[in-house]
Length: 178
Image (cartoon, rainbow, N blue to C red):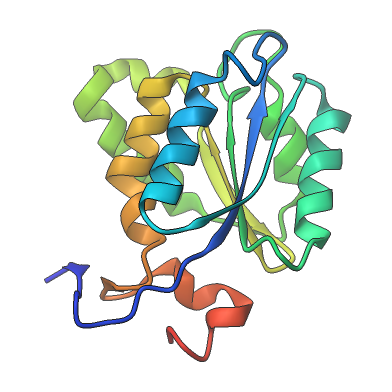
């Protein structure tokens, strides 16, 4: 039966959080705040947080910096995944992937279908791996971020989740969480 095995040790992940927006600031970034609260509340470490504009190079520059940082295990972004003319997160990040995590989009949309119905089609949420760093790109709305964390990532990033968790694929945890 899938779920959290309370008999196992929890291993916190070091997660960097990127907001992609032309309009949000540190004071108005409610989606980023929600994700930061969720991940630290779950016991993970907020390894970095930034806001960049909806520009391919700005997005890539920040993502690449965190991928190169040994103190960042994975990255979650919010924003820029829709169909507005300035939404370019997929175009910025997907070319950097060495592996695509096709199942994430499927599971995210399945979870989102239950909360927003077929409006989930307006999201291009996706995930993959750059070098050994996993990158999850969520829509910018707080509801979408809540769905992404509460219904998908919160479980999959918990090292106690069974039958397996992505925590076991983080290089520093491979021998511990295998």
